[in-house]
Image (cartoon, rainbow over all chains, first blue to last red; front, side, top):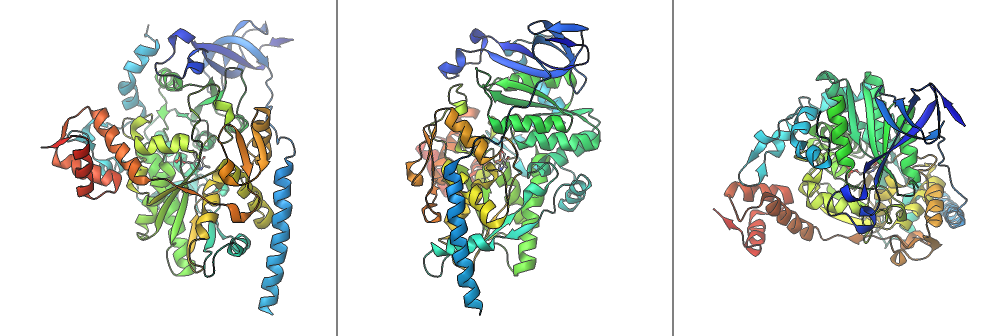
Length: 108
Length: 472
Ligand SMILES: Cc1ncc(COP(=O)(O)O)c(C=O)c1O
């Protein structure tokens, strides 16, 4: 897919390569680069994924980077059903019914 | 052309900071390691009433205080006779972007505008980003939020992805990074490039903004019940929530109220580790921030942190991830409040604490936060499972951070672990001495350390003696 000027896209940049990272990092973090992603409106007329492009961000900054996503989607969601939590809900509901009944009869 | 290498930018740190917060921290320093904390707080030129007014302009504050009667009844079933305190909750989710962080952001953004800044920047993966973005939107300022979001596979914590979405919804630019403390380097470069205000979580504006929370709840409980709360439980991470709330309580006159911090126990997970990053199911309110920020507040993004929790904490307790998810489910089911898990950390602790308190006592949970896609028990537990974490029912004592999440079998199992505050105080003093690189201190430093730790002077002297430090 090609991106056209003005489309909402995401660009990627390597900020620090593994050898350039801060001292005192855990080994697993030291081994990988520090990567940055920024979204904005594409400045160039057309571009393909992987091209080096410029974008205009929501604050109006111009940021250069590798085009990695066109029209990026928010992928987070409400997850799968977690049975363990459903069980908790059902259990406390039953307990509450009992408590409320007792309180009712105390009042009478 | 400016040298933008890591070393060069970090070397310009103090200069960049001074310009971007409009505070000269150097003039506050005295003795060998002390600084004028109340002097720093006085940099905020507004009274608590004026702050409340400023906050009301942008839909912040005056949130409802609810008594959780059903929950209290349930807790009493598992309390010894005569025990089971009344549990109240301050519904901070009612602030404009959905958390108490709006209080913090409101004053910073207001002040930034007054000083003539065109925009604000905040380094945060949490609710604070959305709060700054929502305030900037209303005050007509530009806003950049810098987040640590992804591991090296570009897999992001669902809770943080949601925060990014929310920041964009308010028109903020979101700069997203992989794991690592060099976020600060990117943050500094952005401050230099844009000349925006550093809406740090840790300036005096930020902390003064939270004071209204403690103040409001103290006044409201007093009005309704004729007395101040016996205890207030506060979800603790970087320390602003504890500090601001406690200061507000004191300003309202509630000086007998027990200040209890609560964090999710994430012992054993390394916060700067790429591999550990997605093994946790909480991105704030946990010991990974709570402990380091208590024992050395000045690790923050300003020279002197206005959030200094050891000055105010009477107790500090931890709960497990499983207990907080359990509590979140219970809150929705019996109180009709569906709220975000991280904000319920203090509620989980309050349930356990209430069991030990007298029936006529009042314990206040001082916040809730909004919930939504990603920032929800189902999303967070599904994500945990995908990352190899075992999720099951069982006793909270079986929780091992990074390995499993054990959802309690009953309210009777909810408990807490007491942190040894004296050990944290000792460790704070050690850090203060080391960072200043001193072998001797002056009398004024002893008094300062006593205020910093809530320890009597004698206890500070004893600790200094143990460390082989002379008092001149
Ligand atoms: C909902 C919520 N509660 C509590 C906290 C902890 O606040 P602090 O970092 O000031 O200790 C945070 C922020 O990290 C938060 O977002």
